[in-house]
Length: 419
Ligand SMILES: Nc1nc2c(ncn2[C@H]2C[C@H](O)[C@@H](COP(=O)(O)OP(=O)(O)OP(=O)(O)O)O2)c(=O)[nH]1
Ligand SMILES: Nc1ncnc2c1ncn2[C@@H]1O[C@H](COP(=O)(O)OP(=O)(O)O)[C@@H](O)[C@H]1O
Image (cartoon, rainbow, N blue to C red; front, side, top):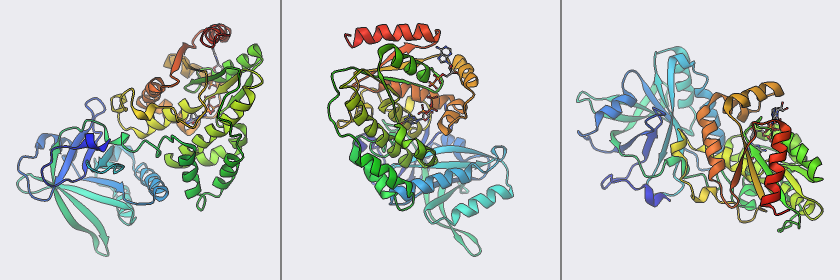
């Protein structure tokens, strides 16, 4: 995929940086040059680096488990700065000619100098795995990126590169790493992640043991398997319980009940580890689906669509426009995961969903909180749901009463599954 990322940068190929400075206009991209460049397309750079001190941070660490932990540390440190004192923008960077070279970082613009911010910058400077840079103009108003490193006397400015604005690559950099880092397309890939983190997360061994004991059947039985998907509070639990009664069906969910005690532990982990946990949950549920569908219809409350949609929406910065295009390989069902007969995506308008969330009164999970705080994230989840294929979701308007939704869905299942 990196082949389509190559930009015309001349003979020297630096990292390309994309900063989400304005959700409406999309990222501003820049590259680095060893020599001074007079034609910088300065207006765009002034938008990024003008008006006050600017730092960028990203994690450089070969081990992906360590990298994901440092990413989390970096995000938590920066979010400790009062939002009035700074503007934090997501920054992605990649090497156009190197696969899997994408790294996620942040650009920090200080609205005012204060001790909290300087303290956070100084602390991050002392984390070996975190690369800190500042951006300054010389007397010719040419912008430079300077790499900073700590010293007893303060900070030392070492290597510096001339910053040049550049055009947008064809694909948003954040989609470069999705495959088997954010979304897992095989049991083995997800299993390997939890194996790699079992020394720092002892609970991983319990998950791996349950994954080893999963029912490993590759075919569903003769009865239909219907997955119910949708954002929180769209009515999945209500509908799946009614369908269980109405169809005398087995009701399963992903992650499966056997993983429920471990879920809060992994919900606190960075995306790489959290998604591997949910992915293994899908494979354990798949074995239960295969077994139960030989005896009766099976209803499943969330499955791979949830895992993939939330992972893609989290991994891709900015708005819906940055999502991988429809038909992209990231939306393809894993070849080794049992596919259901039908996937129904419950949709309701945001106001009704808010009302139902309040009515439910349950504690919000981290992702639910994110869904409410960030309508861009919610839009990306909904759009990612719709782009997943083989099987694709069939959208259901879940705003009528519970009974009307049930009747509508029973008719849909009858028609689609030829019951
Ligand atoms: N089940 C499931 N949830 C996921 C996954 N990835 C992210 N999530 C998010 C979706 C929700 O915001 C949150 C909780 O989802 P669940 O439906 O499993 O739990 P809960 O019963 O609290 O949510 P609900 O309101 O019934 O949809 O976790 C995944 O792979 N599977
Ligand atoms: N069709 C519906 N009409 C009105 N309220 C509903 C409907 N379906 C569910 N609810 C209510 O909305 C809240 C969330 O429903 P729930 O089934 O828990 O959704 P989910 O499992 O998708 O989070 C609950 O309080 C439930 O009683």
